[in-house]
Image (cartoon, rainbow, N blue to C red; front, side, top):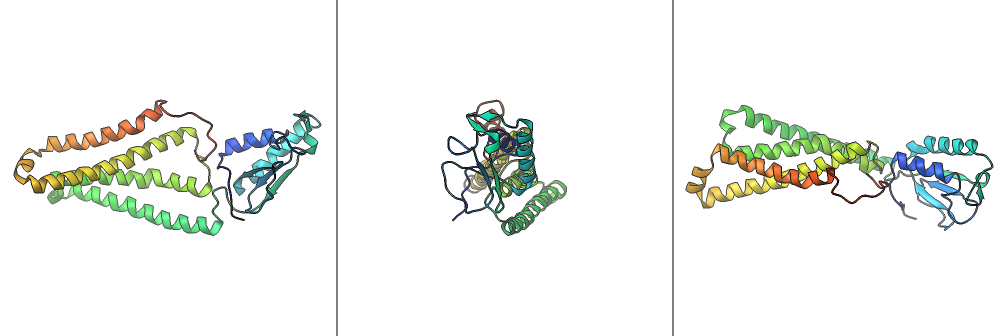
Length: 253
């Protein structure tokens, strides 16, 4: 049977679920309030058992939360089901993301090498344009702007996105989740728009060589680059100011 995950959860949400589930709320309206915390890929499908996929790194926290809940209020009931009847079953297996350990190791190595190439390559482009006199022409300003966007994508965005993808849940906090998402949109949008700007610059340089090269002053080129970044920021800033759909953060971020 294939691995099926009902949703990736953060550590805080998982602990909240386990804390409430020991009292019988996880088990649902069926038998004995039993809950199964499933890591494997083969589990009985039953309406009386709530299946939660979790990372093996949370197993200790799960057992501790369950023990604390049982010892804190022994003999009490929740919804007519006794805590003493609640069962906690932990089945070892894959991670919440669905990846096995070999898959995680291979993906980590490949993407880490890719990130190093992205960061080092774009950093060399920026240094070359900034230091070499022969490269300090206006058309290379657009390439430098693109290199800056890609540099920060590889340095700031990709490591956290890789961790989130491989682990199956976000562990870096809600504040950094918002900032990370906004920067992801900002840098990806600016990278795309810088490519469009480079294409337009090449097109106008060929089709309107004399007129365009005369009008492409340093001030106008700086204005075009600034316009790209401002328009990219207009896309990512509204969610930070509250213009977004609100809801419980129980999947990924």
